[in-house]
Length: 106
Image (cartoon, rainbow, N blue to C red):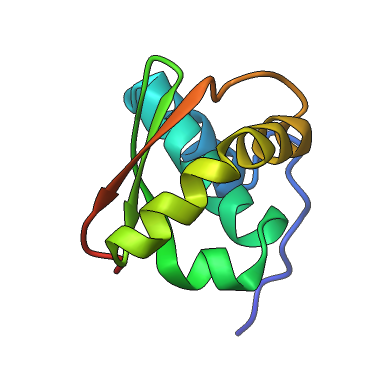
């Protein structure tokens, strides 16, 4: 026998509960890092995304792992533009500077 479900106005979608829980548990810098990671792929040129990935974020400083020293040199020239693109896409100034290091991209 099947029962007919009634809509219960007290029910809340689980996605909202999980998101609120994560926001309360995770430190703010972790949340910001996730936002930056998402924005990185969306706002930067594909060539940069293929050779550089955000690795850590602390106090306005974004640490980015890069595939090689040539890319570090190139990215230092465009650091200000990257900072502006990320901040503009987010809607406020969160990234102040970027430190580039050779490291794992994945």
